[in-house]
Length: 512
Image (cartoon, rainbow, N blue to C red; front, side):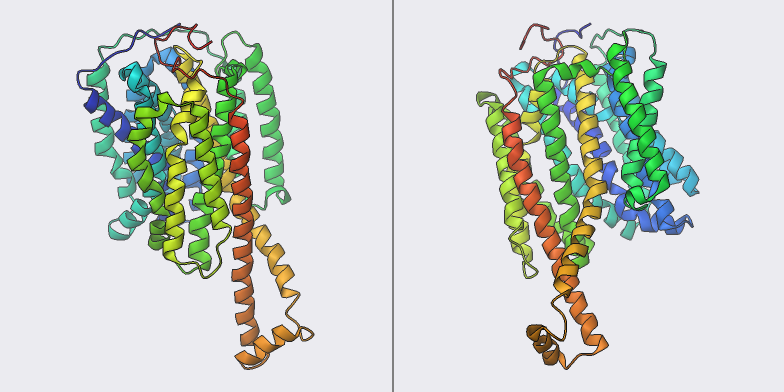
């Protein structure tokens, strides 16, 4: 089944702004609440551990909804699904701000996360619908810019709103944006014809998906707090999740009307593109976790200054995205993706040269350099992912690829801090072996401080801790640098031509 031919709305500019704003709002919401968690927990009278369920509930339901996007599209149509998702996301955002207890907030955040699921894939699909064939690269480049900038702006905006107003406003700001986006997109695209189907509902597939993905996301969000497999709960949830996910794959591959079209992975470009998107985004996400955390905990930066040090990464994508979108179709997209991975890999290797004396300017300059790689990352990879898909496969592929991108970010988020701390313990143990009465340099250092006292030993231990975290950070950036280099090899397994056959309305034969 296929969508109708390419559709031009009455105002392409207005439709594009509305679609982009809705997606920006949704991506922003994945990070904006993080910095407000201590305030939210305090105001609602719960512990900080209970407060983290504000993040976990959103992530779990979002992860469940993303793979279902293709089925929702077939059942309701692209426009109704997008406008419905935006409307319900806006409503649940208002309810999150209006919540009077942590239980209410967690329930509304879970619903908000579920309704957020289809928004990004549908925005991507609808942009490809309304843009002419020659400008579809520009549409994907625009969406990539939104994807990059929103997570950077989120924590800074959330911190500013929480400090100057109150935490409910981090949810209330979605209301006018959501109403505007829903009304404009509906009025601009309602004349477009769509075909829907009413295939039988795959209840077993849905049950296995909810169980497997839901528990996996809880494990990833709570594993670090519960010390991973030292916890019985984590072990039980991991086993149940693994069994459910394996059963889900087996069931879906044999089902006539699968809830998730896993057969898309039979296409080489979709499989290679999705793999590089997931791994590349995970590595990109790690940088956004480690750098601010290191700056705040070990280098004395405030949250705002840490955000400003990381922010230059978003400048060049803003400038380069229109250029990339305009001229990308003249270049082999594997070359652009390779340049992206090389640039981000080199930026990580540059960070691996940092020491505890590194200044703000140096950190910001490396971030700005990485912005070149970020500008070249999303558009080429997304085009490769969708290049051999057609009709409703575009929405299915977009939802599935976005799910794996989000899952990559979840793995990165949960494992990064844990591994970073473990490496610090390792380096701390090695460094402290040298601090003894039998080590002349250590004794000279202590004597210059005024002798071996408890206070001086505590100061030395603090210095060792700072250096150990510095060494752990360097380890991480070496790993990330060479990881990006490895992705250069993987992306060349994709097979051209990448002629945007994935646009809705394209011939099924195109690109095959």
